[in-house]
Every structure is written in structure tokens, then in C-alpha cells.
Amino acid sequence: MNNKLTFLIACLALFAGFSAINLFKFTSSLTTQPQHQDGAPLPDFTTSAASKSKKEIARLKNELQQLSENYRKLETRLEGMENIKEQRKVEDSGDDDGNDDGAGDDDDDEEEEEGSAPSAEEEFVENTSNAPSQTEKMNIVLLYADDWTYKSLGAMGNKFIKTPHIDNIAAHGMLFTHNCVTTAICWISRATLFTGQYVSKHQCPMPEDVGMYAHWEDSLYGRLARNGYYNGFFGKWHHSYENFPQWSFSETSFYHGSHWLDDKTHVTQKNMQDGVNFLRKRPRDKPFSLTVSFFATHAEDGNPKQYLPQKSSMRLYKDDVVPIPPHANVGANNTKFWDLNPPFFTDNNEGRKRWHWRFDTYDKYQKMMKNYYRMATEVDAACGRIIRELKDQNVLNNTLIIFTTDNGNFHAEHGLADKWYPHEESIRVPLVVYDPRMPDSKRGGNNDDFTLNIDLAPTMLKAAGVEPPESMQGQDFADLYLKENTPWRKEFYYEWPDPFKQPTWIPAAEALVRKDYKYIYWPQHKYHQIYDMVNDPLELHDLRNDSSVSDVFSEMKSRFLVLKAEAAGIPTNSTLQKKAKKLKKAQKS
Image (tube, rainbow, N blue to C red; front, side, top):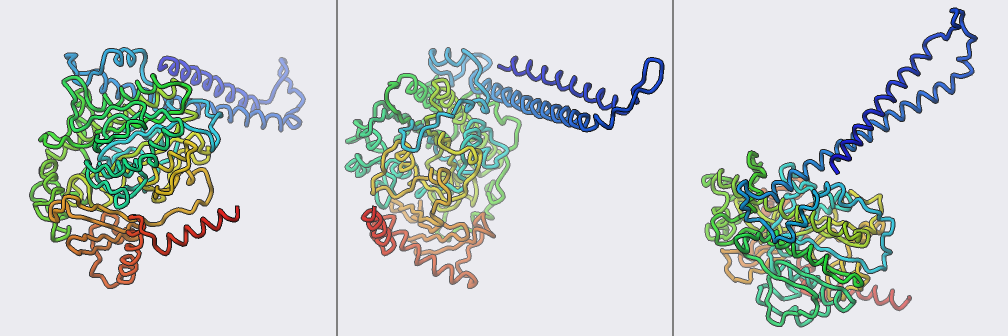
């Protein structure tokens, strides 16, 4: 592929050169008076031919300009292919001595050696003129990462991290810049994915809770299975296997907790291999849904190294310096931003303990973050490989692809590590969507509405032509690009219930989140905060005692109670009004 492009670029360059020469000769001839061989001037026909001459000059200039543009695009494309090839060398080549702990099984290795991966640009080069109608059942691929904050993505403006494949989904689809989770913890976020509900409604605040299984027919996978979908789920399930609803899945394999599953298999490689194998073995006469639930970039709890990437990835970022966020504390004596936290944030706080594990020296910060980013790039490569398989099977034009994560992550911001709390680093996560139904005018664009993880299940069900149950609390975010002027939420309720009941370890937190202000309530301590998100987006200046925002503070406290009740499924005046309008509309139709 690279040789063909190089040859094509050379031909274009040669052709452009000839065009430039012809243009020079042509324009030069217009400035020279034509003569007979004996030196006598020819009759002057330039006036009658002037219009033709101008048109010819314009045509040649336009042709040269177009050739130059094509040359530039092809050169950029070739450079991108070289970057991807170099990345794959780092990820797939192994150690110099050939003993790469990241090696997969023999069959997958042979498959990967058949040819180099296409550039990220090429992954979506497919005839999408046969895009499905809005009522046709689509295939669904959910690429679901772990502990991945919104800033850890090239498409979100991070110039350090290498995520070309996920960025390419955004380039051919849509990037949702203000996507958030309703609870920032692994198992609760997954239960919300399955049910489309807040934790206060699905009532699964701990991994061993099985309440959602009693209503599994109305879950994402239950509804898909009942409507003929071949469902595959691979990776981190993070809930009880007691009474597990196996009937809703055609294939499953659950694993997480360790980055190396054995001496040879990295967990991200296992994720990738399971996803590709599912796509190859699936029946061709059924629509399918594939969920690849990555364990990366979650730390390996209990391991002092925390992040253990594939050995072949260690060359990535090796000589780079990881930028430190402006509101991060790095180093044991740096407490500037930690000191701004509420008074009940003590050394017993789990977020502070994990900060010590990862970020209490500059060298430790650099080492931890490089390994974190290496694992993110590995997930990106796995996503690219799965997308390539979809392209090879010619099903991209009927497949909805979603990349998102379960929660964000503090990287020393506010003197913290991990998640749980209502700060942006914790609750705001990537959401990148490729949808063949998407109009060309929307592709490559950004959307800054508040999308939430409660929206994932209804969106995927709608793409499958399945009506979401009323028990789901989210909305179909495809309406934001398939329809014009779609009414959408301007605020949302956030909750972390602290099922451990330890107020100083991981204190319970709730919030009302808007673009202009964020109200935070710590119920175990009856402590209120408010931040001006326009003038203080890093959430450094608590305005709880500032009289200039007292009216806003009061209004948000009242509104917070309404949204909290709605999240728990408790009818309020607003929800009753919505139901009445819906019933009235149904009666008219």
C-alpha cells in the first residue's frame, strides 16, 4: 500500500511539473509578438483570441492548484500510514530478543502478519451509500474503556497522547465534548449501562447486588436478545455471576483485575482477540451486538507499579515529558490545590492515598502517566483492529460504533487520584460515535450537549429498531445528529452514594451540573459548594460564602432536590406533567 501511494505521489508531482511548464510556456507565448519566418509581423489576432487565452490560463492554473492539493493530501495520507505502521511495530514487534509478553496466540499472530494495518484514515473508506434506514436493525459495537477521563484523547485536544484510531472515529463521526457519567465508579457505571438508569433507581451500588437481574428483560442486552440479536460481551463485567442472565448472550468471556492474564497474554490483547474472533465466528444471518469491555486504563490495584503495559509499548513516550495539569499537585510538599478541598478531605481519603501511590514525586508522576498513556494507546490500537475487521467484512455501512468509558480519572488534579467525586476530571468522559445514518454535514463535527451514560442503552436500542422501555431514564442521543433542533437537557443530577458508609474514606457526593454553575452537596457532612464553571472551569474557588451568587445558590439547591427525586424514580410535578402530555399526544394520534 505504501509503495502504491509513493508511486502515485511521484506521478502527480511529475504531472504537476509538466502542467507548470505548459502554463509558463503558454503565458510566455502571449507576451511575444508572433512573426513570419522572414521576420515580418503576423496579423494581430490577440484581440479576438483574448477571451480564449484567459480561459486557458485559468484552466491551467486551476488544474495545477488541484494537482497540488491532491499531492498534499496524498503526502499527508502517506505520512499517516507511516505513523500507524511505526505504532504497530512498537505494539506488535515484541522485545528485541523476541520474548514479548504481549504476544497473542499463533493464529492471531499469523493473521496480523498477512499485511500491514491500514492508516487510521483508511479504516472508514468504504461505500456508505447503502446506509441503513432509521428503522432498519443495525449492528452495534460498543468499545468500553475504563478509568479514562475526557482529556485523555487526541481528538479532545491532548497533543501528547497517541489515539489515532479513536480520533479517526471522531473524524468520520461525531465527538461529544460534554459527555458525563451519573456515577463515577466502575461497577455502578456498568449497571447504568445495562439498565439505562441511575444507581438510585437500579439499586446496584455494589458489585454483588443482583437486583437488576430481576428485570433483565428490560435491560439493554435483554431487549436485544428478545429481538433476535447475537450478543457478545468480553472483558470486565464487574457484577455478580449469581443468577447471571446467560440467556441474553450468545458469547461471553469475563476477566479483569490484572493487566497480564498470564506470562504471554496482556488483558488488552485478550480484549482485542475476543472481539475479532466474535466477529469472524458470528452467524451472518443475524444482527449482532459486540461489547468489548476493556480493563485498561484502570490501575492494577495492589500492585505498586499500578500500570503494566505491554513490553513492546515501552518505547512509546520514552523520551517525552508528560505535561502536568495546571491544577495538579505533584510532589509530597506540593499541597496548594489539595488544601482547597473540603475540610473532611484528610489523609484517610482514598483519593489522597492513591495520589501518594502514583504522584507524590515528579519522577513517579512521569513514570505512572507514561504507562497510563501507553495502555491508552494499546486500547486505541485494539479499537483500530476491531474496526478493520468490520471493514474487511464489509459491514461498516450498517454498524453503529461507540467508544466511551465508565468514568474519568484524577491525574493529580486537586491533589487526588482515581474518581468518585463530582469534579470534571472524574465525571466527564469521552464519547465518540460512528453512525452510518449520520448526514455528511454532521461528520467530523463536535456536539457540546450534556450526554450521559444513561443515554447509551436507549441509543443502542433505537439503532436496533427496538423501543426502549419506560424504565430507562436516558434519551437517544442519535437525535442530536439525525434531527434538527432536538430539545435536550441543560443540566443533570450526579450521585455517588458511598455504599461503604465511611464518610472520610470516600465520602458520598451529589451534584447539580450545568454549563455555568456546578452545585455540590456532601450529604454525610451536610456541606454545600458552588463553582462558577465559566470563570473557574478548574473548580478552584468555592463560592459558597459569596453573596454575589446567593440567588443562584438557592435556586440550584431547590432544583437539585427535584432532579434527585426524578433520578430515584419518584414522581414529581414535572415528571407527572410530562406523562400527561405524552398520554394526551397518544390519545390524539
